[in-house]
Length: 300
Figure 1 (cartoon, rainbow, N blue to C red):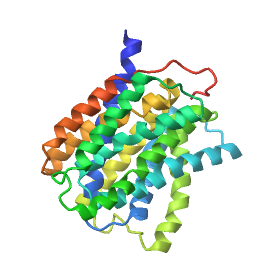
Figure 2: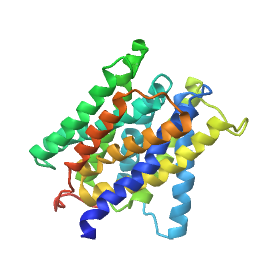
Figure 3: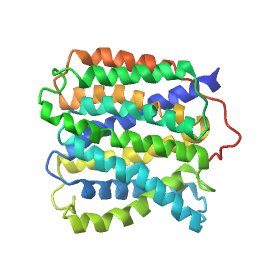
Figure 4: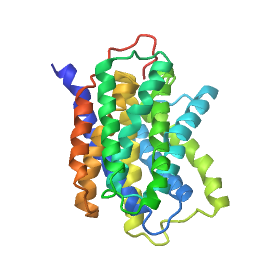
């Protein structure tokens, strides 16, 4: 019984933590900090958190040339590209809308998994994804959700993040993380990501130091970085355990908690369509169950 329940419990715990990063992102961009600067410090904070865990675990970290490739791929498609889009969209879109759009991760992950032949098509699972799409439509189409229709153009930008998360989940499910566990993988990706983003932040003028004036935005950025490091490591572990398609359903839990946190902390005005959309998403999640391990997939 517990073996069947634990993936759902893990999804809820991860959703609560990851969902909090959405309103925190909204707060982080509120003072004008630019994307690459925010991404750098998020990676730096994650590197410190995960590096500390790695030291406490006292597990050797054997680095090979393939390790650098893995870390670079995870950093690029799992943090840099998604967060570049998310920080851009967060300036213009409500946090609750961003929370709904993150639910499109499985809409991208499912067809990618089928194309890679790492998962089989199932009507029940497909219906769950259709309900998720319906939830997005309910929130995006009515004027009540996004009164300023000029900002509708930022919705596709917000969808870039879920697209890359779908790619990343399938990449990890298919190829695994070599001889590295999730903590080592995310620590390495954070360090490599800093090396990539740092120079870009300086050249583009996005660089800033949070130590010059540590306020509400910087505190939100710090909290988001800590949560990102911990929950993202858990996500890598879940992908290896139950597969990319089911792990991507964490988006539904993220959406639910992100909406709750946004209402509590940001006090954003809510459209009456919100709750109907949430019901659609929860129904969609209930139609997806963990698949059996694929012996051809390399697990962490």
